[in-house]
Image (cartoon, rainbow, N blue to C red; front, side):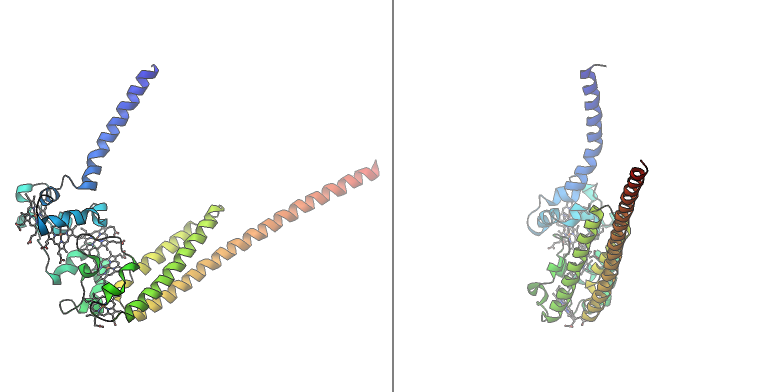
Length: 269
Ligand code: HEC
Ligand code: HEC
Ligand code: HEC
Ligand code: HEC
Ligand code: HEC
C-alpha cells in the first residue's frame, strides 16, 4: 500500500467514527431532536422563554430535557403533549417537590422533614423558590444569601448555616490539596481520596434539613474525620523519613565497610 492509500483508509475510518458519534452528541447537547424544544423555541412569551433558560442549565448539560420533567412524547410533535403519552403539564406549587423528587429522592426526603417542607403551601419555600425552574445551575453555598433567604424571615439562622458550612468546605478543599501533593510524590492515595469523596457527598446533602444544630454537629463530625485523614498523612510522612534515614544508614555502613576493607588490604600489602 502506498502513502495515499493509507491516508484514504485512515480518513474513511475517522469519518465513520465521527458519523457514529455525531447524532447522539448533537441530540444530547442541543436537544434538536426533541420536538418540545423545536416547537417551543418558536413560541412567544412564557411558552418560549423556558427554552433559552433551560439551554444554559445543568439539566440540559446532563441530558435532562423538557419531557424528562414535564413528561410527554419528545419524538411525536402531533401528540407530544397528550396525557396518554405521559404529559404531566405544569406542577402546582404544592406538587413541585414530588415533581423534582422523582430524580432527587434523598433531597426531597430531607426537605420534607425540614421546617421548610413542613411549611409547604403555607409560606415555606419549595425547590423552585431557591433553584429556579428552568435555569437550574450547579448548587453551591452562594444560594444562601441575604437577598434570597430574607424574603420570608431573618437572615441570622441562614448566616450560621452558611458560615459553618463554608468553613468545613474550606477544610475539605485544603485536605484535597494536601492529598494531591502526596499523590504527586508517588504515594498511593486512592483510599484517602475515596474517604474524602464520601465525606464531601454526605456533607453536601446536609443543607435541606435547614437545622442549625444538625449542621453544627455534622461539621464537628467532618472535622474529626479530616483530623483522622491528616493523622494518616503524618504517618506516611514519618514512615518516609524513617525509610530515608534507614537508606542513609545503609549507604554509610557500606562506605565504612569499604573504607575498612581498603585499610586492611593496605596494611597487608
Ligand atoms: C407543535 C408545537 C409543540 C410541541 C411539539 C410541544 N409543545 Fe408544549 N406547548 C405548545 C403550545 C402552543 C402551548 C401553549 C398552549 C397550550 O397549553 O396548549 C404549549 C404549552 C406547554 C406547557 C404549558 C402547559 C400549561 O398548562 O400551561 C408545557 C409544560 C409544555 N407545553 C411542555 C411541552 C413538552 C414537555 C413537550 C414535548 C414532550 C411539548 N410541550 C411539545 C406547543 C408545543
Ligand atoms: C428540571 C425540570 C424542568 C425542565 C427540564 C423543564 N421544565 Fe418547564 N417547568 C418546570 C417547573 C417546576 C415548572 C413550574 C414553574 C414554577 O412553579 O415556577 C415549569 C413550567 C413550565 C411552563 C409554564 C410556564 C408558565 O409561566 O406558565 C412551560 C411552558 C414550560 N415549563 C416549558 C418547558 C419547556 C419547553 C422545557 C424544555 C425546553 C422545559 N419546560 C423544561 C420544570 C422543568
Ligand atoms: C428526570 C430527572 C430529573 C428531574 C425531574 C429533575 N432533575 Fe435536577 N438533576 C438531574 C440530573 C441528572 C442532574 C445532574 C447530575 C447531578 O448533579 O445529580 C441534576 C442536577 C440538579 C442540580 C445540581 C446538583 C449539583 O450537583 O449541584 C440541581 C440544583 C437540581 N438538579 C435541581 C432540580 C430541581 C429544582 C428540579 C425540579 C424543578 C429538578 N432538579 C428536577 C435530574 C433531574
Ligand atoms: C431554601 C432554599 C432551598 C430549597 C427550598 C431547596 N434547595 Fe436544593 N439546595 C439549596 C442550597 C443552598 C444547596 C447547596 C448546598 C451545598 O452546596 O452544600 C442546595 C443543593 C441542592 C442539590 C445538590 C446537593 C447534592 O446533594 O448533590 C440538589 C440536587 C438540590 N438542591 C435539589 C433540590 C430539590 C429537588 C429541592 C426540593 C425538594 C430543593 N433542592 C429545595 C437550597 C435549597
Ligand atoms: C418562601 C419563604 C422562605 C424562604 C425564601 C426561605 N425560608 Fe427559611 N423558613 C421559612 C419558613 C416558613 C420557616 C418556618 C418558620 C420559621 O422557623 O421561621 C423557615 C425556617 C427556616 C429555618 C429554621 C429551621 C428550624 O428547624 O428551626 C432556617 C435555618 C431557614 N429557614 C433557613 C433558610 C435559608 C438558608 C434560606 C435561603 C437559602 C431560607 N430559609 C429561605 C420560609 C422561607
